Amino acid sequence: MDIRMLTDFFMWCTIVNAGLMILTFLVWLFAADFVYRLHGKWFAMPRETFNAIFYCFLGFYKIVFIVFNVAPWAALAIVG
Image (cartoon, rainbow, N blue to C red; front, top):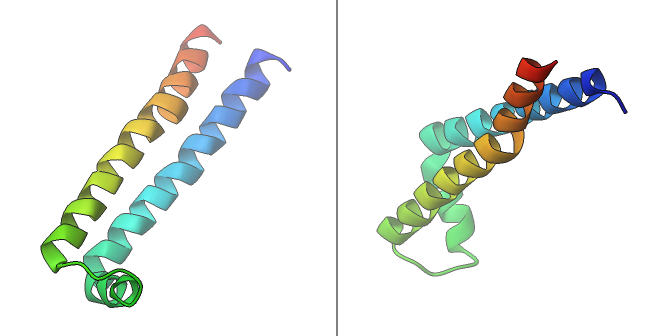
């Protein structure tokens, strides 16, 4: 495996994960009630708690996305 292949790999990982993050945000933006009702059948919790959990999930996903996708891709792009 050479540096170009690793750079391409992390570039595609970044693109795919950014797409998933945007999709998750759009689902939350336009279908939050549906998602709440769907999960409300399995877990009884108030709407405020559900919103807080989802907000924390998106924040955690963003941090993991930057640390494990964007940073390695940027470093390899700079080195390569």
